[in-house]
Image 1: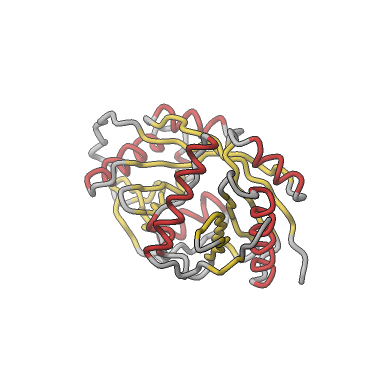
Image 2: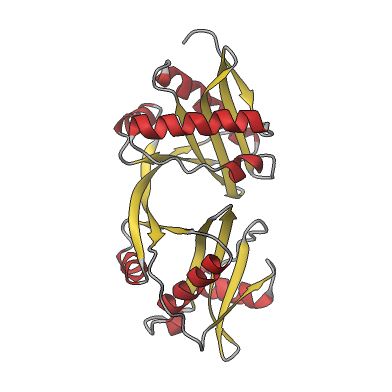
Length: 277
């Protein structure tokens, strides 16, 4: 592998961020893939549940790995490196650094993301002992302007809003605290009918946690909520609105497509179970 070293990158400088994004661009061009990483994300790596490592050689960042966690047991991660270097060895070193850090933090399950178009990445993860767990399509809202329904209200609420908790329990049987995301409640005549969370990074808005209460599904409310939240995000200056949907969720996929979203690319998630150190 030659001389190189791995360093924590939980607080990268702007110069380091420029290097990391430059490496990302090289990898995307060389491998024909998308890497879900932004400047805003890199600036937030010191927040709880997040972390990263860089592989440094002769003052250059030639490999990078990052992870984040929404729940205590599980973290999601990605590893990438310059293919003109010892790509596989660098990725193994970074992968092992991520595993060790996540073990130390008490995570028991680690998901590695790989753009389906990158077959070498899939081979690498399989050889590292990871197994394909599930896949998600990245969906992007089209530029078409759609008229939002006037009788549906969507408004931002606090992370611990009791009505939000009620809708989420009704839909998922649980409640997940997301203090870093903006949380929206949908209602008709004051009655909560659904919710959606938004992760904002610059001009990109990622929709997560979308749902309609079970007793009101099949009435077109899902499409109304999506139209409305897209309008809200565009009015606030976000020119790209995205969401992820599991590839085998035909009902949700059909809803998103009818609501003006199109498939962009597919991410495969490879899982490895972590034991105690």
